[in-house]
Amino acid sequence: MEKANLRKAYGEALVEEGLTNKDIVVLEADLSKSTMSALFKEKYPERFFEMGIAEQNMTSTAAGFALAGKIPFTGTFAVFAAGRAYDQIRCAVAIPQANVKLVGSSCGLSDFGDGKTHQSVEDANIIRAMPNMTVLNPLDAVEVKKIVKAVIKYRGPVYIRINRNDLPVYTPPEGEYEIGKIYPIVEGGDAAVFATGVMVSKAVEAAERLKSEGVSVQVLNVSTLKPLLKEEVLKYARGKKAVVCAEESVRTGGLGQALASLLIGEVNVPFGIAAIDDVFGMSAHSYEELLVKFGLSTEDVYKAVKKALEKR
Image 1 (cartoon, rainbow, N blue to C red):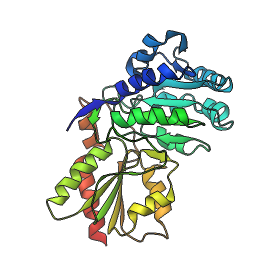
Image 2: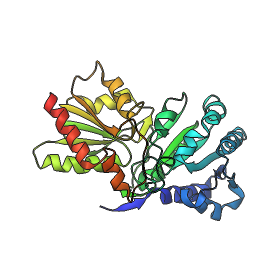
Image 3: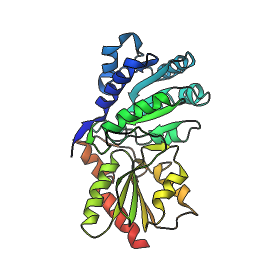
Image 4: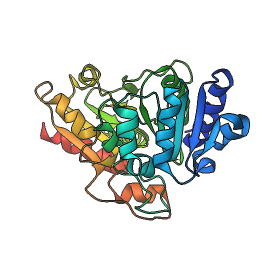
């Protein structure tokens, strides 16, 4: 399976779109070489603004750029984007529905070496709870580029999670990204796994194992965490014997609970969640080590599907 880096794809997408759209500006909180917005800085230095380690100021300044008719992208680690600048996001971006694109890089456990202070296991959940916010979580590098193009056309505040590592590519190059659409990756009729981000690849691997056992599993890429459209969820959940969610976030306020709220009273099937329990992360030698430690491995998705099917 081909792999590609999501951060690099983000930087390249900014450069590509910046060529024809002069309204795009990029603000960074001293992490441009990591988030890869440095690529934009090299190409269009007059539209790049280094704000230093001052995420709150960066967010407020971005709101000012939006008021002036620009399309600002802000960049920092996800844990800082959602945490340090929460009040500024709420008051300067979400409430006035400013056209700001907030980018949280190294999301989830993907910054495996820096430990719990730098691992954002709750960022998407926090921003999802905020009115007026759109929250996107791409599964691969190709989808990152499509999402950047889509949010430039979309008018309103958006939060994008970007994984730090190289991930398998499943998104076809053709076609445009549609906010709110759920994308099937693997077809199947027995169970549906609604997966997001890195968990899509884990769900695909679990589906292959279950197929060898005679179980047909549909794997769905939920890269739009908000808005989570009820009609899209029900379209894939109906007719299945079980439904499972796989997400790289804590359970509380996550995708699994959002899915459950839409299924209640509509689809009466066993439901399971593979997610992070009520804990922070930790340092490790590899990303995969953390995914196993916190219940996000292929084996965990496999067990969640098996357990749900056994309950029917």
